[in-house]
Length: 243
Image 1 (cartoon, rainbow, N blue to C red):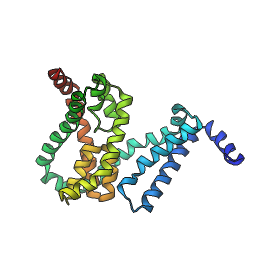
Image 2: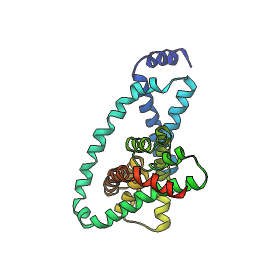
Image 3: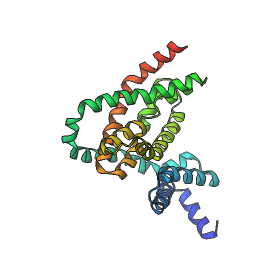
């Protein structure tokens, strides 16, 4: 580091501004790359920002607690941002009423398939019980997923990583899957991404259209509710049958 940059780093590392500054700068850089590449899915800004943050923290020897002292301000905004998703959802109210039964069926099948397929494959491949339980809520938004993992005696920290990886993978691959299946309906795009890829998928869906984003937000919320109600008793029961 040059003396100027070094002095700035020393100052920031002793204040809560560190985490906030790093987060905003990393995401701004990732967004710039994403825009320059024509919003190519492989350059997902969340994935790039996370990679940049991990690299900086590792190189500077900054521990997570110090980083989160500032990043918690961004974390706090997740609540209002989630509530604000109701606005575009309200704009789609008429179509939602017409699709209520197909959406409910899709929600149940998608939620259970996302959880049970991951847990089942892990169990077949010989993963430990803790790993299997940590995998089950991988398609649920992070705070709820960690709570489900804890109730299943899994590892919440491992679940958080798996949730992030699932969201990024879904945001990257969804475009190609829809093209391959020749699915053009933005409501279908969004609802599927919300179930499979939670918040990161929802952010990607809003880049497709407001309609896709609205349906993704609905799916993300309902999937969290269904998973929280069903997985804590369904997954242990099914795993017990297979042992």
